[in-house]
Structure formats: structure tokens, C-alpha cells
Amino acid sequence: MEDIIQVVDYDDFWPIQFEQEKPHILNALGDAILDIQHIGSTSVPGLAAKPIIDILVGAKQLQPSDTHIKALEKLGYVYEGEAGVPGRRFFRKGMPRTHHLHFVKLGNEVWEYQLLFRDFLRTHPEAAKEYEALKRKLAVPFQLDREGYISSKAPLIIELLAKARKWRQEA
Image (cartoon, rainbow, N blue to C red; front, side, top):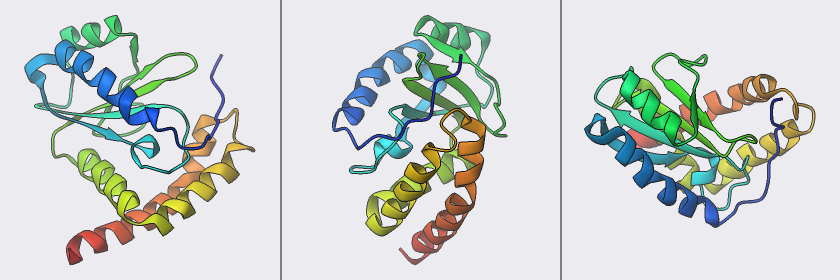
């Protein structure tokens, strides 16, 4: 059974949950990790979100080794391969979900746009409010349709990423 889409008010505990999970991931993956970041809506103070901690792992190479996959499975993660996003290997944890781990090659396109989107929302409250309003609106009709929820957010995400790229160039 798939868990439902639920957008909740920001929780000050989300960054703490990331910091609690981070050393376990670092220990499991060792020197394969070059950087690890808290991303997604739970990483943006004040932003309502699905209560799932998104973790971006920047690695030396895109494909995790079998040893790394097994180490993450011992932490409760389920490996789902590319899961529809080229340049990323995806792991989920919990049912209902508690964590998403996005394993990417450090500096690739997925790495760059995830951090750009997070940083833009953190510094542009009007964009964060617009994104939050859409997420809350979509959570009702798509509560049992994760793919529909994600694809329905895509046009606004593309628009905000374009603004974020312009912002980054001007900085």
C-alpha cells in the first residue's frame, strides 16, 4: 500500500531529523560521499511540506555499488534505481515514507538544480509562498496519486527554476 500525499505546516524538527540521519549515511557510504545536503521543502524554513526528509548525496560516481546499496538497506532504505529521474539513483525509507535519499554524481545537473531550487526558495519568500500554495492545493486531489502530484507541480518548478537561474547569474 502506498502512503498518501499530505502537506503539513513547517516543523522545526525537520533539520534536526536530517542532522540525525546524516552521520548514519556518512558511516554507511564512507569515502564514496563527497558532500551531503538537506534539500526539498523540509529544508526551507517556514515552508509547508510533505513530512519526508530529502537528502542529496553527492558521490564520486552516479551508480552506487552493491556494497553501498546493501549498507543503505541496513539503515532501512529501499533502492528504486533511477525512478524516472536521469542522473539520480533513488532510495526511500519508511512506510509511511520518512526519508528520500537522492544519490547523484557530485556537481551533475540534478545536484545543481536541487541546490539552486532550495537556495532560491530560502531567499525568496514570495516564491516559497507560491510553491506552498500550489502544494497544498494539489495535495487534496492527488492524495493517493504521488506521480500526479509530482507532475502537476512541474510547471511551477520549471518557472521558479528559470527565475532562480536568473537570480544566480545576477548575484
